[in-house]
Length: 541
Image (spheres, helix red, strand yellow):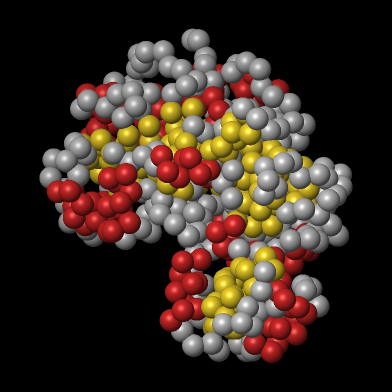
């Protein structure tokens, strides 16, 4: 077969090369590469039979499962576009997303039937629905919906699709932390190099031929077993699955994050690599190992990789206490910019200046407010941008596209709004997203830096930091804190005393709100809209 830098082509090449290898373990199901290939073909033929073709958008509304992955490959085989749907969205958010994304078909788990049924009358272009059975007690599927396994049974397992292109489109909807969902539109070849393994994270070398991915997989001499913990509706997990697929590795999925279930799978499936999204997953995972009576054989675990959320030094240190030889990485990036850089963490080297300091990937730069490159070691704060392998814009949002996708001296860049500075050695230190930056008397305060310090307080389990209105300074720092179980809730005075040892005085929280549970997205990203509501509606502790 002729292989392009197309995601379906890359998977099919792996399926041909590694057909007998076990590919996926999910909720008790096991599939080889050949079995996944055949089932994806069956579903693709079913979707084609109801009129789904190149460029059509197909929503996937489900927890992590084999069916999620089968649907993803089936959609790409048709040159159609999958649309990831956040299963925590309520009806109004789903209505916006479904309409904005121009869905033509939808694959969803039965448990989400009531929400889907409520939305269908307002979505005349959504012409086909497939329902994945689960253990829920929800009523039967919406009218004219087809059972997932019935769709499989009626479709051919043969691969008889037409040629594809590296310019076929992939759309990643990102909810961000403050605004409405936005669909980032990527050509397949661009997103493969930005997120899918087309550029080696260790060496920076670039794949020149699509066939090199299979060659790389054969050269490894065996399979790495990879467990991405975050939901597949989150881009980091999508790319953990796809990137490992292209080189013949084995993937283990967990439906929802539960620390002991993750460690049980690491033990049972001999997992080598676990991918998390910062403290929200890292802290519960590592502290689960300290519970009385807990014992797992985790000798297979080689590495932990974190991306998309703050991974605090204190939590990294806890991992090294349990796993002294662990290979640990901390990456920065975004749905718009792909992987902007990675750092390799060693015991005793977990300290951060603010966010992680990383070796930037090819095409990543930092521009100051005059759109001039920030000079290494200057201390100037600018915004991360990337050229080269970038998206083409946001779907159905020309205004936001014009704001984020810019040209400098004729070169296209994407600049989502992450602040950073360039160190003297050329490495990049991430500071935070501009939309959540706190301005206190003209001083910029990046919440992630303060959050890391507050979370290291011995009585704090989790924390989010936002700006609260202040008559004198414009804004002041407010901390929303979830106390550590079994500990006394911290006070504003104890939090301030702790923070004074680690950050400048103007960054110290001036307001404290104690909550039973800090709200986060399933990906682990902080929910700053929720936190802002707590500050505006609640009384300080």
